[in-house]
Image (cartoon, rainbow, N blue to C red):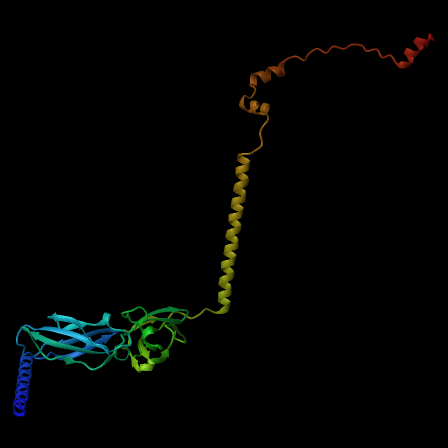
Length: 321
């Protein structure tokens, strides 16, 4: 093959390649691309959304995926829906590009790519929840972080999280007091007016990323009366102590006398058998009267001779007394 033939072959091959490329481009152009492609991320949930092309050639399907530093990974394929959830596929500190294309009767549109997406930088933070309780003239504020895809997600994603708290009297909405970047999730609002209704809102703040959440819903609570005077507390305590002492004493006396009464009613000592017999079978009245009316028994007297030892000695010696 001489030089002229080789040149003609190369020119012909280029022409065929360009023709095929143009043909593919025309085929791809026949399927319009999805429109308004956007990434929605709140509390680290990541969703890719898009609108169908206008005009649409018919019933379209879509394929969406993401590209990391390694490779492209399809997630939603040949679906008719116009959104794709990527939450479970991504890491907290990854860098991703999302893409989607339309499909119709075996033909596809060109890919539509998003800009680079950082979860920690680009995710939006939802509003926290606030609960209030009033005690001793103060209001306790408890803040609950928004629910994330992983437990305690904000603390894992950001090194520093704080709260901006705004409160005001319900009747004076134009004069709020702002407490900036409070680190505690619970704090006490003091120096408030007694029996006045106060309203509170809070928002999450991440200073390192210069981002904040929306404010929470307005929550209101009425303050109670302040702390009582010291002398009144002492009087109440002494009264309570006196009542306790009197109550304990009365209970002790009741138990003691009850115990004595039971012992008196049911003694433990055993009665003699003759006394038991007397109690069981007491003597009859007629026998007692007969004993009283009976004559006294006759007394019999006998003379008693007393012989002393001296008399006995005299008789023995034969000496007359």
